[in-house]
Length: 252
Image (cartoon, rainbow, N blue to C red; front, side, top):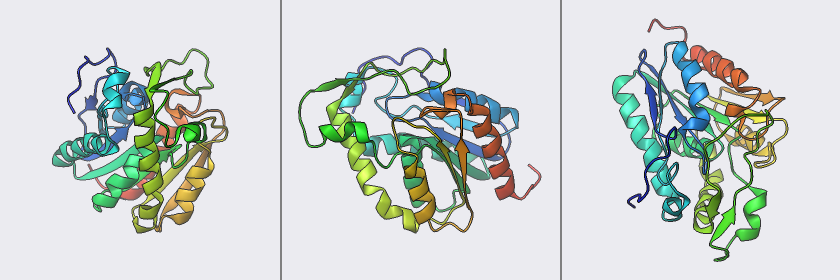
Protein backbone atom coordinates (compact mmCIF):
# COMPACT_ATOMS: atom_id res chain seq x y z
CA UNK A 1 0.00 0.00 0.00
CA UNK A 2 1.44 3.32 -1.12
CA UNK A 3 0.45 6.38 0.87
CA UNK A 4 -0.97 9.22 -1.21
CA UNK A 5 -0.72 12.09 1.24
CA UNK A 6 2.27 13.92 2.73
CA UNK A 7 3.24 13.39 6.36
CA UNK A 8 1.69 15.91 8.72
CA UNK A 9 4.31 18.27 10.13
CA UNK A 10 5.42 16.90 13.49
CA UNK A 11 4.17 13.37 12.80
CA UNK A 12 7.42 12.06 11.34
CA UNK A 13 9.59 9.25 12.70
CA UNK A 14 12.14 10.42 15.23
CA UNK A 15 15.47 8.97 16.29
CA UNK A 16 18.08 9.83 18.90
CA UNK A 17 21.43 8.11 18.65
CA UNK A 18 22.92 7.17 22.01
CA UNK A 19 24.58 4.17 23.61
CA UNK A 20 24.25 0.46 22.83
CA UNK A 21 20.94 0.14 24.65
CA UNK A 22 18.07 0.81 22.26
CA UNK A 23 14.47 1.66 23.05
CA UNK A 24 11.95 1.25 20.24
CA UNK A 25 8.73 3.20 20.85
CA UNK A 26 5.41 2.52 19.14
CA UNK A 27 2.51 4.95 19.05
CA UNK A 28 -1.09 3.76 18.96
CA UNK A 29 -4.04 3.56 16.60
CA UNK A 30 -4.60 6.83 14.66
CA UNK A 31 -1.73 8.39 16.63
CA UNK A 32 1.74 9.34 15.43
CA UNK A 33 5.31 9.47 16.84
CA UNK A 34 4.41 12.95 18.10
CA UNK A 35 2.32 11.36 20.86
CA UNK A 36 5.37 9.55 22.26
CA UNK A 37 8.02 12.14 21.46
CA UNK A 38 8.24 13.46 25.02
CA UNK A 39 9.01 9.94 26.26
CA UNK A 40 11.64 9.54 23.56
CA UNK A 41 13.34 12.84 24.34
CA UNK A 42 13.46 12.09 28.07
CA UNK A 43 14.77 8.55 27.57
CA UNK A 44 17.44 9.89 25.20
CA UNK A 45 18.62 12.13 28.04
CA UNK A 46 19.60 8.95 29.92
CA UNK A 47 21.86 8.07 27.00
CA UNK A 48 19.69 5.46 25.30
CA UNK A 49 19.37 5.15 21.53
CA UNK A 50 15.69 5.81 20.79
CA UNK A 51 13.65 5.23 17.65
CA UNK A 52 9.93 5.81 17.11
CA UNK A 53 8.68 4.77 13.65
CA UNK A 54 5.50 6.11 12.11
CA UNK A 55 3.15 3.20 11.52
CA UNK A 56 1.94 2.96 7.93
CA UNK A 57 -1.22 4.92 7.15
CA UNK A 58 -0.77 7.13 10.22
CA UNK A 59 0.17 10.81 10.29
CA UNK A 60 -0.93 11.56 6.72
CA UNK A 61 -4.67 11.37 5.93
CA UNK A 62 -7.30 8.95 7.16
CA UNK A 63 -7.90 7.67 3.63
CA UNK A 64 -4.35 6.28 3.72
CA UNK A 65 -5.26 4.41 6.90
CA UNK A 66 -8.30 2.90 5.19
CA UNK A 67 -6.10 0.82 2.91
CA UNK A 68 -3.79 -0.51 5.64
CA UNK A 69 -3.65 -3.93 7.23
CA UNK A 70 -2.52 -4.75 10.73
CA UNK A 71 0.34 -6.70 9.15
CA UNK A 72 1.60 -3.45 7.60
CA UNK A 73 1.49 -1.73 10.98
CA UNK A 74 3.57 -4.57 12.38
CA UNK A 75 6.01 -4.31 9.46
CA UNK A 76 6.52 -0.60 10.22
CA UNK A 77 7.47 -1.44 13.79
CA UNK A 78 9.57 -4.41 12.70
CA UNK A 79 11.64 -2.25 10.34
CA UNK A 80 12.32 0.11 13.21
CA UNK A 81 13.43 -2.81 15.36
CA UNK A 82 15.79 -4.10 12.69
CA UNK A 83 17.33 -0.67 12.27
CA UNK A 84 17.85 -0.24 16.02
CA UNK A 85 19.14 -3.80 16.41
CA UNK A 86 21.94 -3.09 13.91
CA UNK A 87 23.21 -0.28 16.12
CA UNK A 88 22.46 -1.58 19.62
CA UNK A 89 23.48 -4.55 21.74
CA UNK A 90 20.21 -4.68 23.69
CA UNK A 91 16.79 -3.52 22.48
CA UNK A 92 13.69 -2.85 24.55
CA UNK A 93 10.24 -2.05 23.15
CA UNK A 94 7.81 0.48 24.61
CA UNK A 95 4.33 0.48 23.10
CA UNK A 96 1.24 2.53 23.88
CA UNK A 97 -2.29 1.26 23.22
CA UNK A 98 -2.21 -0.60 19.87
CA UNK A 99 1.54 -0.03 20.01
CA UNK A 100 1.56 -2.24 23.09
CA UNK A 101 -0.34 -4.92 21.19
CA UNK A 102 2.18 -4.75 18.34
CA UNK A 103 5.02 -4.91 20.88
CA UNK A 104 3.72 -8.28 22.07
CA UNK A 105 3.89 -9.59 18.52
CA UNK A 106 7.40 -8.20 18.04
CA UNK A 107 8.60 -9.93 21.22
CA UNK A 108 6.92 -13.12 20.04
CA UNK A 109 8.86 -13.06 16.77
CA UNK A 110 12.19 -11.81 18.16
CA UNK A 111 13.02 -13.73 21.31
CA UNK A 112 16.20 -11.69 21.83
CA UNK A 113 14.22 -8.57 22.76
CA UNK A 114 15.36 -7.73 26.29
CA UNK A 115 12.05 -6.51 27.63
CA UNK A 116 8.75 -4.82 26.78
CA UNK A 117 7.03 -1.86 28.39
CA UNK A 118 3.29 -1.73 27.72
CA UNK A 119 1.33 1.48 28.32
CA UNK A 120 -2.44 0.88 28.26
CA UNK A 121 -2.06 -1.99 25.76
CA UNK A 122 -5.18 -2.77 23.74
CA UNK A 123 -6.86 -6.17 23.65
CA UNK A 124 -10.42 -4.82 23.73
CA UNK A 125 -11.88 -1.49 22.69
CA UNK A 126 -15.52 -1.39 23.79
CA UNK A 127 -16.58 1.74 21.90
CA UNK A 128 -15.72 0.08 18.57
CA UNK A 129 -17.67 -3.12 19.21
CA UNK A 130 -20.79 -1.67 17.58
CA UNK A 131 -18.94 -1.55 14.24
CA UNK A 132 -17.81 -5.17 14.26
CA UNK A 133 -18.70 -6.82 10.96
CA UNK A 134 -20.40 -3.71 9.56
CA UNK A 135 -19.54 -1.99 6.28
CA UNK A 136 -21.12 1.36 7.05
CA UNK A 137 -20.55 4.12 7.89
CA UNK A 138 -17.34 4.24 5.88
CA UNK A 139 -15.80 6.74 8.32
CA UNK A 140 -16.48 7.40 11.98
CA UNK A 141 -15.93 10.76 13.63
CA UNK A 142 -13.04 10.62 16.06
CA UNK A 143 -13.59 12.50 19.30
CA UNK A 144 -11.00 14.40 21.29
CA UNK A 145 -8.03 12.34 22.53
CA UNK A 146 -8.54 10.80 25.98
CA UNK A 147 -6.11 13.01 27.89
CA UNK A 148 -6.71 14.39 31.38
CA UNK A 149 -4.12 17.18 31.20
CA UNK A 150 -5.56 20.42 29.86
CA UNK A 151 -3.78 21.91 26.90
CA UNK A 152 -2.14 18.65 25.82
CA UNK A 153 -2.13 18.28 22.05
CA UNK A 154 -2.04 15.09 20.01
CA UNK A 155 -1.74 14.85 16.23
CA UNK A 156 -4.50 12.48 15.22
CA UNK A 157 -7.20 12.03 12.59
CA UNK A 158 -10.64 13.65 12.67
CA UNK A 159 -12.18 10.51 11.17
CA UNK A 160 -11.44 6.79 11.44
CA UNK A 161 -12.11 4.38 8.56
CA UNK A 162 -14.32 1.45 9.54
CA UNK A 163 -11.96 -0.86 7.61
CA UNK A 164 -9.12 0.24 9.89
CA UNK A 165 -11.27 -0.47 12.94
CA UNK A 166 -11.84 -3.99 11.61
CA UNK A 167 -8.07 -4.44 11.20
CA UNK A 168 -7.51 -3.29 14.77
CA UNK A 169 -10.20 -5.67 16.02
CA UNK A 170 -8.59 -8.57 14.16
CA UNK A 171 -5.22 -7.72 15.70
CA UNK A 172 -6.70 -7.57 19.20
CA UNK A 173 -8.66 -10.79 18.67
CA UNK A 174 -5.61 -12.86 17.68
CA UNK A 175 -3.23 -11.48 20.32
CA UNK A 176 -4.32 -13.35 23.49
CA UNK A 177 -3.27 -16.65 21.89
CA UNK A 178 0.41 -15.64 21.78
CA UNK A 179 0.66 -14.14 25.26
CA UNK A 180 1.39 -17.46 27.05
CA UNK A 181 4.28 -18.00 24.60
CA UNK A 182 6.08 -14.86 25.73
CA UNK A 183 8.88 -15.10 28.28
CA UNK A 184 10.68 -11.75 28.11
CA UNK A 185 10.55 -9.36 31.09
CA UNK A 186 7.49 -7.11 30.96
CA UNK A 187 6.44 -3.88 32.65
CA UNK A 188 2.76 -3.07 32.35
CA UNK A 189 1.56 0.48 32.95
CA UNK A 190 -2.15 1.19 33.17
CA UNK A 191 -4.06 4.40 33.77
CA UNK A 192 -6.37 4.19 36.76
CA UNK A 193 -9.07 5.73 34.55
CA UNK A 194 -9.03 4.94 30.84
CA UNK A 195 -12.08 5.78 28.71
CA UNK A 196 -10.78 3.94 25.63
CA UNK A 197 -9.08 0.68 26.66
CA UNK A 198 -10.17 -0.97 29.92
CA UNK A 199 -7.26 -1.15 32.42
CA UNK A 200 -8.12 -4.84 32.82
CA UNK A 201 -6.39 -5.40 29.47
CA UNK A 202 -3.04 -4.78 31.17
CA UNK A 203 -4.02 -7.09 34.05
CA UNK A 204 -4.88 -9.87 31.60
CA UNK A 205 -1.51 -9.63 29.85
CA UNK A 206 0.48 -9.59 33.08
CA UNK A 207 -1.50 -12.53 34.42
CA UNK A 208 -1.16 -14.72 31.32
CA UNK A 209 2.33 -13.88 30.09
CA UNK A 210 4.92 -16.55 31.00
CA UNK A 211 7.63 -14.07 31.99
CA UNK A 212 9.33 -14.67 35.30
CA UNK A 213 9.91 -10.92 35.64
CA UNK A 214 6.72 -8.92 35.37
CA UNK A 215 5.40 -5.83 37.10
CA UNK A 216 2.46 -3.44 36.93
CA UNK A 217 2.51 0.29 37.59
CA UNK A 218 -0.72 2.26 37.98
CA UNK A 219 -0.78 5.77 36.50
CA UNK A 220 -3.10 7.59 38.92
CA UNK A 221 -3.51 10.90 37.11
CA UNK A 222 -3.72 10.03 33.42
CA UNK A 223 -6.30 8.84 30.92
CA UNK A 224 -5.65 6.68 27.83
CA UNK A 225 -2.97 8.72 26.03
CA UNK A 226 -0.72 8.58 29.07
CA UNK A 227 2.41 9.60 27.14
CA UNK A 228 0.97 13.12 26.87
CA UNK A 229 -0.69 13.21 30.28
CA UNK A 230 0.17 14.11 33.87
CA UNK A 231 2.04 10.85 34.54
CA UNK A 232 4.35 10.95 31.53
CA UNK A 233 7.41 11.33 33.78
CA UNK A 234 6.26 8.30 35.78
CA UNK A 235 6.39 6.34 32.51
CA UNK A 236 9.88 7.62 31.74
CA UNK A 237 11.22 6.87 35.21
CA UNK A 238 9.57 3.44 35.30
CA UNK A 239 10.97 2.58 31.90
CA UNK A 240 14.48 3.71 32.86
CA UNK A 241 14.43 1.69 36.09
CA UNK A 242 13.10 -1.39 34.25
CA UNK A 243 15.78 -1.16 31.55
CA UNK A 244 18.54 -0.74 34.11
CA UNK A 245 17.32 -3.78 36.02
CA UNK A 246 17.45 -5.89 32.88
CA UNK A 247 20.89 -4.80 31.67
CA UNK A 248 22.27 -5.47 35.18
CA UNK A 249 24.08 -2.13 35.27
CA UNK A 250 26.52 -3.21 32.58
CA UNK A 251 28.91 -0.54 31.32
CA UNK A 252 27.58 0.96 28.09
